[in-house]
Length: 304
View 1 (cartoon, rainbow, N blue to C red):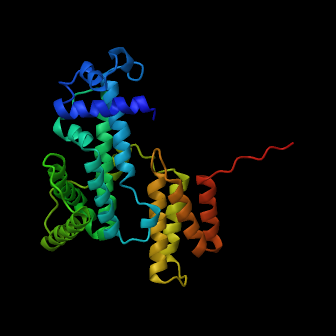
View 2 (cartoon, rainbow, N blue to C red; view 1 turned 90 degrees about the vertical axis):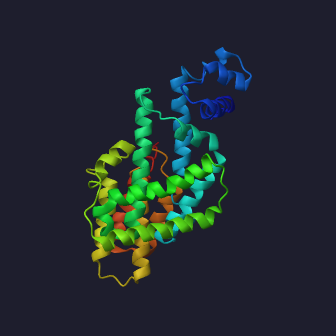
View 3 (cartoon, helix red, strand yellow; view 1 turned 180 degrees about the vertical axis):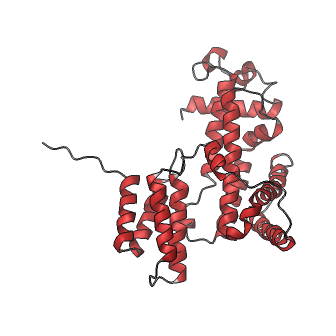
């Protein structure tokens, strides 16, 4: 991003966080920057356009930071959740003005594109919750996904607000692991009580649509991944349990990247494909190679 445009975004976030979006004027933003008012319109058509850019830029940065990094692939599902929570806490501290802007003033009733962006952020947060819940607790939590996701969001949100508005200093590593243990307590209690769920079943297809992810139905790459999952889980191969678990985790990460609308992590895609090819042979190897060709198509050679 151009330096000047980034400076304008940072100044806008500071002003929105201090006074709120509605109360902030373009003049106050340019005064913060010390530039002529007309200059800002070279980059942004209106205050709504400026807010859209703020949410897109910093919102995407937030969710990129919530993804699994290549060095974290071998972690257990609980450790992955704890590690990503820890990164979220660091993001909050590094971008307090942005988070204050999001939490301080409801951004409803604004430009339709802003409403769509906020809806997408909420859907992505819910999908992030459900992916971790299913990875940790499996199908046993599926009927309670709505409640479990709400509880996870609720307990994390209270600490978010303490950081953003109370300037509370936490040991992020200790806090993230504490929250994962409390999540274990909550899920254990839900299972033990055997009560009817409060919230209705989650419509994951709708959530993916709202989040802007590609449709799984009819998607060749996802079909190949699911085929490999089925074959690995039913295969009589000599893999030990750890290797089989690693292969399924690799496929889960591949699927997570494939469904993203933008910013697919090429390093994760290549690393997971390499892991699969290291352990898979025969017909399954052909499926992996076909998947690789779909994800990384080679340009046609020029014939003289």
